[in-house]
Image (cartoon, rainbow, N blue to C red; front, side):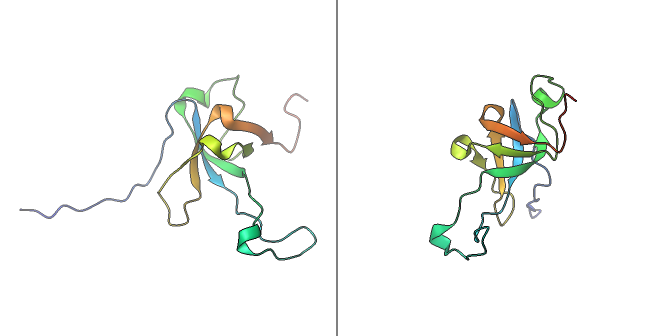
Length: 107
């Protein structure tokens, strides 16, 4: 009998109105340079979009694109056990509350 080999996943594609986000590192230091203990870590709810679902890719009502930096509500974010540091999350579009832009897209 042949030995079954386990293949590692190489790609995660969100389904429905969701995006895959790589969460930014939590801050361990204040702006003034004071180091914080692990228990007092400042929670971070920003990240970069790694992949968007096909359902919202060309939807003009959802102005999200790959690599956008976003602010999101983490309550419904689903962690993806894909990497050892577990920084990937599937986030519903309705939980994305802001997109950071360098210029006004309406200008």
